[in-house]
Amino acid sequence: MNPEDLGRTDFIIIGSGIAGLYTALHLADAGRVTVISKLDLCAGNTRFAQGGVAAAFYENDSPELHLEDTWRAGGAFGDRAAIGVMVREAPEVIADLIKRGVKFDSRNGAVLLSREGFHSRNRIWHIGGDATGKELLKVLLRDSKKKKIHFYENSFVEHLLTGESGCCGVSFIKGGKRFLLQAGAVILASGGCSQIYCYSTGANESTGDGLAMAYRAGAVLRDLEFFQFHPTVFFPPRGDPFLITEAVRGEGAYLVNHDGERFAEKYHPLGELGPRDVLARAILMERERTRLPVYLDLRHLGAAFIRERFPTVYHRCLEWGLDITRERIPVSPAAHYLIGGIVTDLEGRTAVRNLFAVGEVASTGVHGANRLASNSLLEGLVFGRRVACAAAAIRTIDRGGGRIKVKEYLAERNRSETAAGNDSACRAVRPLLQKLLWEKVGLLRSSFGLEEAVARFEQWLPLLNCRFMERELCENQNMLLIGLMMARAAAARRESRGCHFRDDFPESDPRLQGRHLVFKKQLQETGDMPGLDWDGIFHDYRNGGE
Ligand code: SIN
Image 1: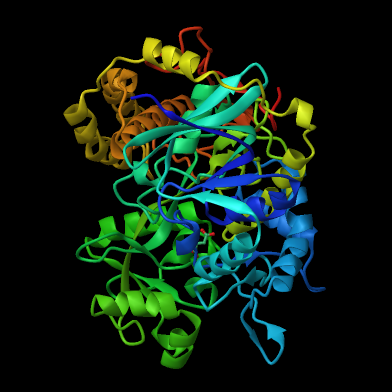
Image 2: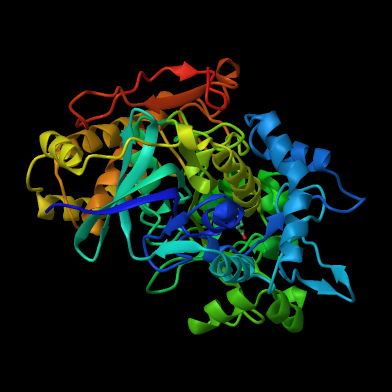
């Protein structure tokens, strides 16, 4: 089917979570901005974010302390320059949000800052108790609607269009039809890929589309072996797992085994506020040791406090008949956040001209090998503003130009892809790959399991050559591509570091300090190739260059 040519805009932003909307707001006065959202506006993980936004604002704290906490939580693997930018600009974005009318929780005029794991100070700004993401989106969406921003909802971006001047538009599918939209610059704010695992805290739409399309367009991906698992997730009898925010532990909740014994300190001196990966493994070990569930116990915090401070958690658990003011919450780890992503510089530029990335999809280097709690919303805000500034500054003459010739685009796509896809094989692959990644590329990894995972993924690769119009099938292709990269990177990193834990190599290897695994497609004249090009070699890959 021939795509409909929608003409041209100045900036396309893919994604309408915190990173996408905040970027859009800051870019709106620089030209025509079009936001494309896969589902309704505000889809993605932001709306589930409970904890808050980390920012050192007051005198008893400092950006330097925030930097050290972020760096240490990231296994001393993060980019200190990038972290420095994020923590120094954090107070500015908080001030901007307050100016926009965001009402951070406060009492008697004093902001109620909370603590989460590995933070040395109370510096988490939250809204509505544990509804931070949802409440922030309301304000950002309201402000976006006051600007001249064009929104396409329920529109699945399948490809980035590239030409001589870099990225110059997208093709997307909406209502069974394909569209082309050209632009001066494209900004990926499309989130991560937590759906790649069968148990995750993330949105169902979080399928790694941005990562996959950026790779196909020639951007560089790195650190895909680092995927963070959240230790405390409630698995209801039916439906999606539900995050129990780390803030409950920050307020003093205990992790206990079935006999009510606290065990976190056995695994880390910071106890319940230790790193997420350590606590997640501790929960698995405690469960294996006792063969019984592990719980979060909030009861000693008091019913009134629990209801006021954690209304989302309280009501969600109550829906399943669990009154957390009287009962303990059974918890298990689940996949939470992709640490790696598309390599960007400090203004969100990728290796492809006029293509930017921001938020979970990007790898700015701030998270190192493991992310500090409540730095994800912050990263989206700080770098969203920076991306907007950089994109706005591209001289008109340097913007993605040379209109895409629709006929040539079609001829190219048709050459590189078979006419019809194998629908049923591609549909069936999602649960298989989700289970495979959970079992073999999950919290505990070993050579044997990782090699098995890589081999299984390679068998599925022919599916990447098929062409589909259905969103679910395109997503499955994206998950296949990213899942293979994650498995390969995890197999190649023969050490444990941050959230990447290998049973067979439980220590960090000092020779791999600061060394990254990167994926970069060798662009072929004939377009997409099945399989995956990478050299499997560690690089000192820092913010866009070697
Ligand atoms: C949480 O509230 O525990 C999650 C917040 C985060 O991942 O930073």
